[in-house]
Image (tube, rainbow, N blue to C red):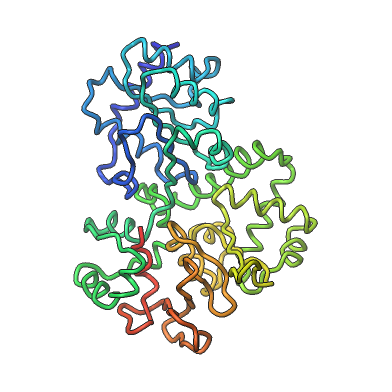
Length: 396
């Protein structure tokens, strides 16, 4: 068994890797003994793990890559694999697709406690790993890898390198920052293509095949992740598709549970369960009400697809307002808390209120609200509290 894994690891590591590294690579503490990378399917976790192996100052026979969908891993436990690896002098073990192994959380704890070996693991679905967070939190450093940001997409398309911008920096100095970027690239030229096919790194393999790849990721998340983990019967997968299609066709402020349940032909109770499953699978995003003391605004949750690319395979003509808000939630939602205010579209970190709209969007809905801003689509440079929507794509 172990000889097969060694051979597979050697062959896999000989394959060429992209030179481009996702932003998370520089944020991970690679000195930790147990590291986990979670996130949506297709975000680039396997590539990141292999780039980590490539960067190690180790001899080739001191590091091992295994994937849990390899036939040689069907019988042995991960603990047994790690024990054997340690005997062969392996110092770093990368375990890909770890969610495909039963009892992986227990095995990881035992590896951490009893073996002198570093482990980095990834999962193609955040569902399985997030449900084990309590068991692993005292031992593992867990990182979430989101879809590509607009900044990363621009770097891949243009070859330029751009600084990651904090939200505070964007709010304080957006006009100057936009002008600096405009000297190097035309953001609006690339913003539309990014919204359609720029959220996953495999867009570099060809625009024509991108929709099919994305549809495959969607179906695998529904069939292999959600159906397996939560026990959703396969013949109910069509209802999950209908829920996603209903979200795709709607405007966020119009959404209510009764409307979506009717469109998906399921009960309100079943809908709430399915929405939770879809959010855990990085297919949707829920924005709750703004906190006011010990209560929340009595409005329905705002529901979004997880990224704008999903619109291209779920509905042919998405509403412009829905696309804009989905992009803002994706860009700012990583690393910030988003809630649903009584006025405006988003409240960020309980402090900043945002209205998202087109180039002519005004401030009527934000009057008398402190720290209020408009994120406007279709403009290159903003002024005052009006900020180009695309610039928020530099937040990670």
